[in-house]
Length: 185
Image 1 (cartoon, rainbow, N blue to C red):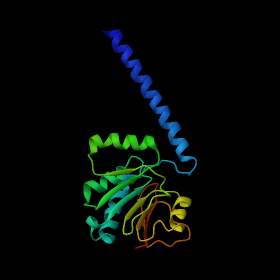
Image 2: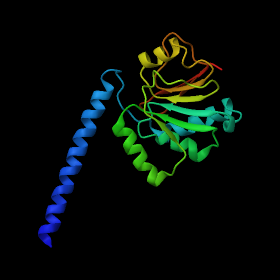
Image 3: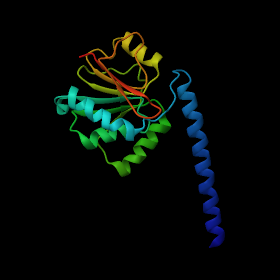
Image 4: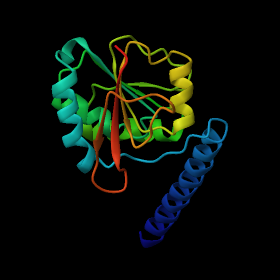
């Protein structure tokens, strides 16, 4: 019995190690062509500010789509699902490993978030949407110059859209520094 337990433990360790290596390689390969790396929002610092922004700018969440491009594990999308009655909630992520882990976490968090595996630069953002993002400036600039954010309320953590004056800028405590609101509606 001890031998069987040792063999199963060894097999599990091998599977976990291979899975982790695959996750790292796949994450790196997905981020290279688009220069998008995975960095998580600090929810403890962001949520109070997001609640303030939503109360001021979103009069009827039930008629507004919540979209999180570059969602990673979609923690923020699930927070949005648990605290507001949005029309729909969409988490956009290209990285297959992160999407797999996000869906695995849904066993605990529950359903209600739609996952879309696509390049966030090719996604069509419906007019009137609330778009929360934590994306580098070149990505934001491209989304803006291509008109993909037209008609949306965009909230960007840390990074500004170059050469575009935000509707509002709010200080965020800690290392993420600020949240910028762009009302393109």
